[in-house]
Amino acid sequence: MFIPMDLASGYLQIPLTPEAAEKTEFITADMTGQFTRMPFGLSSAVAEFTRLMQYVLGSLQGKTVHNYLDDMVITICGSDWPDLLTKLRPGLKKTRAINKYPVPEDAHSLRRFLGLASFFRRFIPKFTLIAAPLGKLTKKGERFCWGEEHEEAFRELQTALVSDTVLTLFRPDAATTELYTDASTIGLGAIKLELLCLVWSMKKLRQFLLGVRFVVYTDCQALMYLNNFRSTNSQVARWHDSLQEYDYKVKYRPGIQMSHVDALSHAPVTMNERDLDEELAGRYEVCTLMMEEDRALMCQTADPEVARKLEIVKTTPEAENDNYKVEHGLLYRKHGDSFSPCPRQCGRACW
Image (tube, rainbow, N blue to C red; front, side):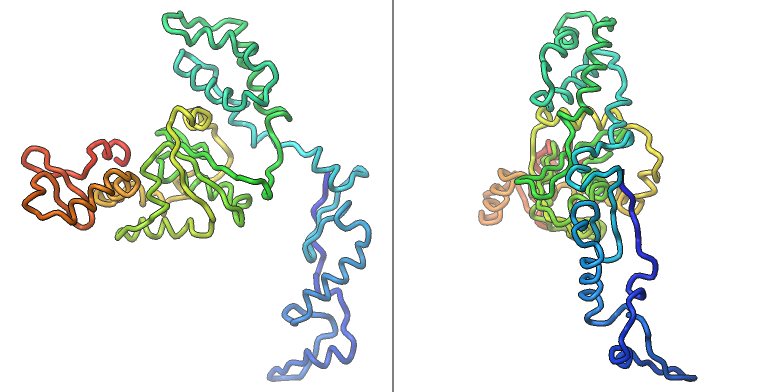
């Protein structure tokens, strides 16, 4: 539907006047020379080349042709650019995670799929009617027996999820941009370890997210730590620095409200691209080698109740705090004869 083109030689296609050529003189060990055509590096080269492209393309610019300096995209089949945008559809690789989604084998996996589909229910006409046979199989005490009507409903929802009513082109000028991430032990789907999936997701969608303010939603409350980052671990610091080119804020959302990404993270598809461990080999160490203290710090920073208790303990005489202590900025609580970072449930969120 469109052809990408790059002008051969670029700026060197523009001849220089004798007066302009004199200003490009250069000296070598053997000779003195000057350019006869416009080279890269002249202060006015970009402006002159842009002016020339506008003159050459004329009324076609912005309609049939879009260009940035010497790079152009030309529409074909007689369409102008706005018309082409309405006809663009995602390729099969973009929708493969839905098209290849495995048929549910039990009520639990079926609930996961329905959670994915339900997130987009307002864009799917007659969603309740289509999903009714599947919903019956998830009821308590109902025997899971997959039949023809269930297969038909499953395939219809699959098709609906990749239809024009659900999918649309990314709009960088949208009022809000949201990135949902979730991790499982078997896949990343904007999605393998909660920390790593943020890096992977932003790297995967970098061309869309750069220059756009967006919100990252996660069901791991510990990642709220990224909003007020502080760590003495050099690996964590380097990992955090890799995200600084983005304008983002992390927000927590309970897992029950993240069913759409949970479903995708548990049903990854194999793509013809570099292995994830190879792609993020350096960053993977951040998750696997993070010290226990850093993990605890992540959780405590994200928990306002713990942060409040930390301040109280810091300002209270030691004799009155037999059950708590602060070391290296971490709040510890006494359990038996030993102290451990609090809250204790923090361990489940971080390691």
